[in-house]
Image (cartoon, rainbow, N blue to C red):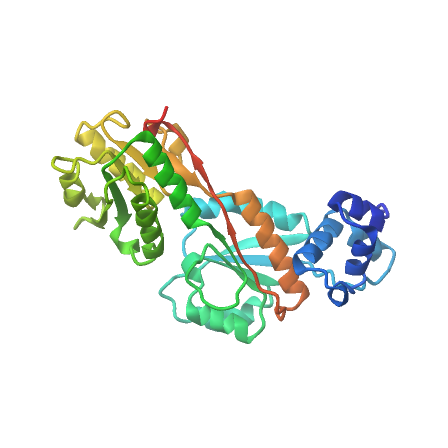
Length: 344
């Protein structure tokens, strides 16, 4: 038998009044102008403390809907540091409110995916679309059927949609200030050519942030293309900027997957990191902390992102996808400083 949860218990944990908690739990919050975000916090805490379990065990019908279920996260590739980095936090966040969680992989070239939305309703109470999985057709199909969904790490969608993203402008600013602090002047920004379109906005933000540092020369951006055998990158363009007259002081990789091949190039050229050239990644990657040298990088706040996604999804499901209150949340990342940038 679950312990009875009183309004004052919830109010004490949340730091709000008992009256506010009562209004939310009695479905009167909107009438009294209580914000959706506050309602989310109250309902989440009630779920975590077992309030709804107690009502169910005592055959009491709650005035607010308590809708359990399973959330599906749609990704274009499971082989991504962000996906398996945030997944444990999402599982914890959803399980704390009694919901299941699973991952769905989507072929980005599959034009039939939007037709599967009705089938998904049988299995998932709501969907999380990560990055490029939120294509126009899929989003349009979800909106037309009032299917609860949230965009995660997608900065390209326009309109009133719920989304949680990393503040890439803040991340670029953290890197630029650190480069300036270390006294580097000649900066090369390296990006995977096949992903340049997807990262165009982030590349521009990085260039702008570096340009605002007066001691830093105008950065050079190069697009690395795959070789004919597709087992490595063509580094001819990058090698040009490793020599005079430019002679790069530091390379900033926009994608984490470029770090290993770039480090391998430096070893072949007998360039020591960070003694001869420094390196920073705009994304965290596998094993960056145990590399030689450990790689300085931008680390996304998985825990806070997962909590915000769970809160927003709860509200979407509660409103059957018809809620008029849509939020675009950006969360500031952190710069994890390791040896590769030359600061230690």
